[in-house]
Image: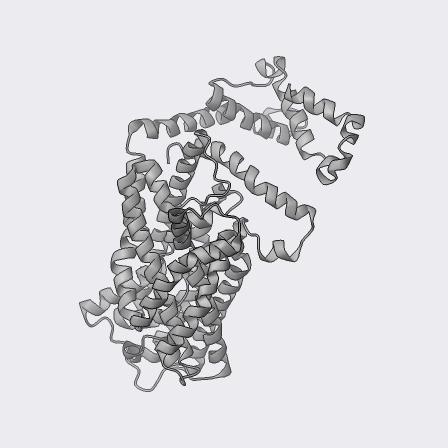
Length: 505
């Protein structure tokens, strides 16, 4: 964390340049349907992606976990794993910023390249960590994709049992294979929004339906009864908050990745409003019957509301399948040299070898309960919690790495204390905008150049403040040539071209 702040300054400006070109072009053409539904990268897009990715089939199996662990343990472990997962997601974001800043100092461009977690580990800790991160992440994402296909077949069976579950797996495997046409996480704007809305409906349907149904006759809440059942339920909850395998890809898709810090925490807080009421209400209504019914749909009475929830969950599982497979697509594209290809069709064709084995595994393993437990116990533990924590500690283990942050913090604190921010210390009207700009420039100059340019001293003598004021005015002003390149000659008539040349030189 020591050099995170300074790394952000170096990284964000370059990152914004690439992404904001696309953002500005969208603004120029107005709110086109394509830009609204297809091109994402804002803070809200990242929040929707994180929230939607955390809750999928586990929403229907959490009541089963409560029956294994008991109400109190289920609630406590959800909150514990949720906050612990948010903390490790924050550590991953810090390491991403550190890695990217180092690479951009080496003039490495990521214009057509998506940074992934194993590359961050490779850049910061070496090839051994890259291999470990790649193995755990790919295995976790592969089984996560398998689980989504199996879950689709399990859920649709409650509406239409004409086909067996394996046949439904064939059908949904073909449907989910269409995710190869979604280029990257930039293009999940509409899908993540719809996915979160669908899980929200399902969660509150489970809550309301359970409360309306009431407790079954002779309901018993005996959990926990066995240690094996207790830890099986705990691993399922662990898996619920294990969406970190795609954190780096979601962060890279943002226009301003530095704003990711608290997004995962905010997403987790929203997820709590879905998982806690639905699991608690369903367990309250059906008790130990859930021990033999791992899917909550099997106990809730069939109504149009339940059928709607089943259909919405099927669509959401298609979206979650895409979330889990897209990082695998990226890895495979890099292996075969297709990652920089701009043709969506060629990239889609190159991704098919990733989908086919997942489809095959889903067919031969028709039950996702044991897979959930195995993935939660082993893969999520390392991928989500152990590896990010160890990577962060090793990256910042040296005194020099920590010292950079200490120097930066001292500079900011010293300058803050020396600046008269209180209105009482300055008579008359205080220009707050100018004062904040002066403070920001002083901090930047102290860190970059080892000296400040305070007002009244060298700051004024060198014309540094005037240059920045002119630059900001030109940067935020209207430029006709940006909208109509053929009219760029107008800049010479208005004097804007002369001002640009004067400011730059």
